[in-house]
Length: 83
Picture (tube, one colour):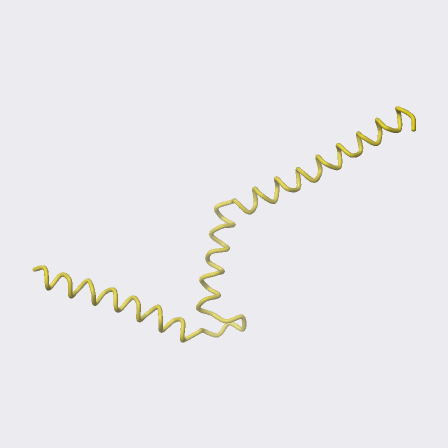
């Protein structure tokens, strides 16, 4: 192989590596964007309370409501006991 072929091959390899790095950096920036993170979290929470067909998952909703009511009742009892 000639030195010119080695050089052009190396230049193509370096350019391909730069392109891969640029793509990876773009993906990392997108994934770490606060807007993207919030969107993923909201989708996860929504999936917990709504099935893929759009119907509410009443069992999970009732569990969450029960936990909130229990927490409020606990606060009320603790305040009454401490007063």
